Image (tube, rainbow, N blue to C red; front, side):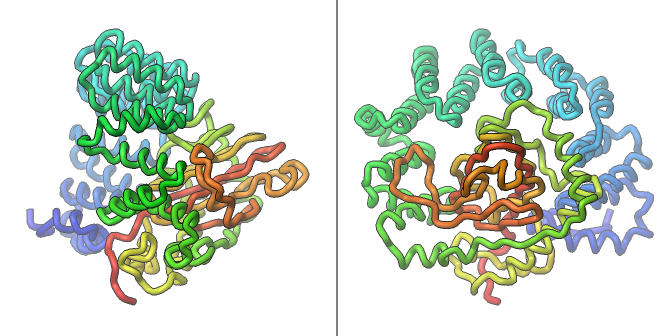
Length: 498
């Protein structure tokens, strides 16, 4: 069919917006063609317009209702849109019981619909099979983690290890879970157990070195790192950087961070350069990177009381789990699953559009492009024009004493906090309780660096900042704090003068 030439080029060059316009111009000619609606659905989905993508998948199914690809694509898009879709996946699984994508979709849908025990039952049918994939194990463990806690989650992997099912993967998941929670002694014990079971796994030796360094067992860590000198590992080098930074070996730390920043890993290593340059008092580089606090912007998102009530009520319904994922920064609270801004509820779409207006205003105020700067190296004209995508969006609910520990967002370009519910001042406690603070490094680094900027929580307040910025929240005394946060994807095009 010749409705579009070079279709793959549109997707490869991230020109789905142009493809949509081209396809819409041919709608009268191809409106009875399922492939036409499939292409349009894929283009809308790539542009994160899930309501229109769903409409197109429905057109596909009207034309070819028995097409399994159309059925699964509709189910996947519905899941991301926040629609109940477990029955759709159940039908797909009945047609192909060995299809991993269908099984994962079914279990995920059940979990999101509150039937997590049924989701566990679905996944457990496969966990003692040698053919089970790591993806199934991971989802089963995650469902347990979110609803019953870390012990139940680890039991999934321990049972797999007992039956010799993906032992390397299973050990690594347990180790990483303890590591993320800073339970280093437990992580080290599992590493020793794993090494005895899998003596030739070099990744376990890397894990051991990293954990020893985070435990500040520096002599033992250095010996391990020296034995791994020929092993190429970003994870290992980041741990050496962190240890060097903590011990005051700033030139070693800077050399590692500069190397990786130059080869496309700025989002992970620039935050450490910020810390290094502050310790070195390198004001020239700091001014280049941070411009003081110029890149931290606040604005007000107008929301009526009815809108706040509607949005808050919806988000409360989504905060159904008992604990967050182990790799998340949330402590004493929960974080919603999937990309919030892909949901179809009108209030979500309304807030997303208001947020996008503020992102456009932020982009318009950015200084002249700089081809080496993590924030300024992109041509932001497409952002100014409103073509904005989100690598993630979610809600965080913090309870009394809850906080986000210091972290950055390697998958983002811009990050954020939009406050929807905030305890009154009496419940927050003394300032800066409840504030978002910038510049404070992770506590385990033991660095003599303090907060460089902070913002008070206020209902309707939107804080935008570079994703490479260290930030955390201060615990508060009473009440709860409800926010929406998101990572704006970097514009596709790099440096272009404007």
